[in-house]
Image (cartoon, rainbow, N blue to C red; front, side, top):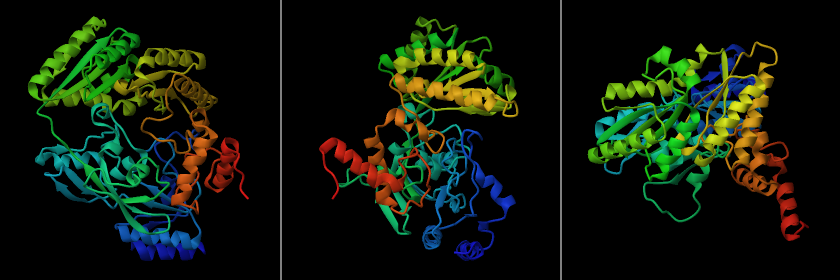
Length: 486
């Protein structure tokens, strides 16, 4: 189909102002929040901004007719290249589908469109004593649809779980343009868990147009504690001791000294500048339980050589402590023009060894690395600080990244806790998964999208793309069972 015809038909679907196609307008859609050099940029033919499920379905049907790929996109805050149109074609930007359609305080659910901002959902539900628990650091900008695509986490997922634990049902436009619902209000439905398959699929199986989400009741009391330690090692041991005591805080975050040097002068959050590391610990629940647990945590921290333990029950003080953590990435500009981070996860018992290895890698590559991360579940966020204008810096960052990822996998970790694979980490997939594993995953992709047109080029390393699935599965069957296709 001629490009001009394609754009004219998209404009008929989305209406005036609903389609961008000039090169200057499309520039922003060539990127997401990831680092250029680590993730390939790509320009789409057009970006369509639908306002309804019917429009999304019509765009997908048109793309099928034209034989072009479709890439769903939320706010573009992703960090793995998942919303970049590697195959060109049409970007479907869902930010104008931003209505909260219903909040049911009896069932503790909300029905929302994919463009709803994460934090705004909690603010909307707050008067009814409810909130949406998954809280990525980008929650003031990221959307529910993007959270579903990446199975986003956040500090409070230690206690409350990641996005998949809070999605009850989805309205989805399939790659052939059909609209279906998966899941629903009732739990334990028979059959395959298609909702579970869609959450975290990085927009490769369908485009979410509505989400039925689980809301959580606002706790009676909340306590935030700041525990300062002489170094990362003692803070890591305190983390393990807290969890080993049977305590599951709502959040348990670690912030190292390099991060404190960036955050504290900017936001005055109250972090001691001379601490080697601090733990930010939040406990919530019934008042008596919260206070008793807080005392137990304080005792554990002091036994682990904490130099200071401070508690905040006042909402303003709590908010300030959290502001320092949530804005840590933004504060990195005080230390370097650019940063690059990963989100590998390691067992909590491996935190001291892993952070020591990150320190060694920092020295080996001559690269400052700040650590601010979800310590309670071992979800690391090493921030490699560099200047992309300086020759060799990007190459150093990519080399250090590879070393960090390989070590995390070697100690029993995973490639990603919440940012997704996208294009950034697809070539690392073979570190964790066998060829048979990848063929099975690609088979699921093929079942939903046999044409391979929905967000192509993501997750699967070269040799495992959708068009190669049948050969891979046949090879796996032959190796395992001696079965050869006729």
